[in-house]
Length: 291
Length: 125
Image (cartoon, rainbow over all chains, first blue to last red; front, side):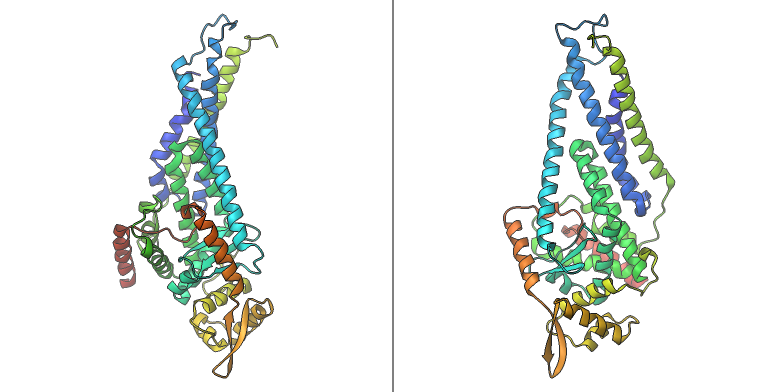
């Protein structure tokens, strides 16, 4: 309990510190999902570890009956863990609420759509996929006009790839993991990047042309950013469109198994440590109350 | 799996979306021949015609006469409804950044320069 209970947090830092590297070394196909699952496991383990740290305060109760006077968690740590735990759980609820709100909004746009493609008149240039059975592609008219015919085909293939690979679920997992444990925010960014690159790769394979996909991305990004240059949008800059265009047009990226092994190992260690800490906690307090 | 489909091949659902997108991007109604020219890529004219008819039957496009010939343009009501709902929510304060799966995110000026440079390199190849 002196070490194991802190390992999930150590693993979050480890995975987050390597997130950027992993987002270039993992194969985009399945890599996003792998990191999303690893992040979720680590987030769950770390929330559970916080809970163990918090309830270790029981040894301060006046009627504490055990001969072992103190659990091996300093009171200061327990006192610090409690608000962090509350904050983390609160963040998860906020993320879930936002997700529900967004889902309702997206459904209100695609509701009653007769086909896969839902065109929205005259707002800003935008294109995105809405998960469902079988899912929809929402595109605004300014976006359609900003692209040439082959670029439109690339964009549609890209969005369709998101739907088929269920990327939105992987992204929600990563989002919730980052909400529960903000140390994992870089991992969420990496999941996003890998999902986008996977969709880019699928579109490039479908069209048999990587440059067209890169041009479509560039045209869309330039169209979308034109009116709002002053507003900072998301912090995906470094990993965003430029990284994707470079991956599409540059030399073929090298993928290694080491990335997958790192993510999986971090997740397994975090989970095992959470179990181990729980087991130790149980053995320490087992005799405390006659049950 | 479609993911491994050979370049150039696409299913009827995909073609429907593509043709619809082409009609939406156009400034006016398009004749089947114009649609064929835009999405060409080895597709038979008849295929285009079949899909335009299907879209017409579903009420997604309308048939008009353009310079004496039958032409198609998108049925705009649904799109305007969706746009209104979208605008209403955006005005109510839903952050655009909350959309999880978008084609692209906006750029900052540095990115824009990097993007143009990457494209120039790609086109030279």
